[in-house]
Length: 225
Image 1 (cartoon, rainbow, N blue to C red):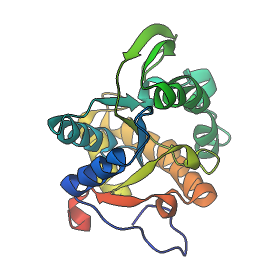
Image 2 (tube, helix red, strand yellow):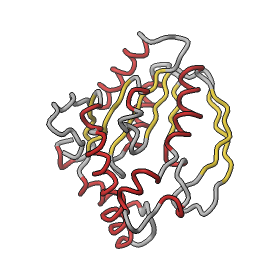
Image 3 (cartoon, rainbow, N blue to C red):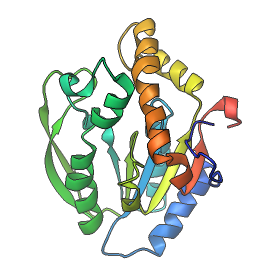
């Protein structure tokens, strides 16, 4: 298990349909003037985006309006994102613009069920920001997905927190298969082993994200899913 639970008891395991049912129940009991904020987090290449898309599809099939908000477009540029002296610790602290993601997108959308925002977007290959407009209206459920979402100082903003559990080994093979960090498998392996996974271990040590989640979703055949 990777989830950073320390000595705490592991949260309950949910299938995707069961997790969607839990979200529906929470939404039914929630303030109708606000949007329910669901966080979906896990290590890099755990399948957070895939899980979020599946949850959103199930919720939409129930008639709910769902906004999927990914952290991936909120990267910092390479000069800020990487540091050779402390690759993992620096990446944990500086890879993503997590505070603006929460302050400018998630919290206003949760409070008002709508948002019209122009943000500075960057992906893995970006050397400069580009402007991107984000518009959501009449939202019932926000599914926020990305790494490091359950940082200790931010955990309380989520009305429901789901951890996507996946081994480092499986995540690495997924990353290599999809060429997430470049065309060369060797470069991807090196980046994950030197930067991404050490950053996740810092996250585990500081924030215990798995233990603070309301539930886990297994997305790793080696772990029994």
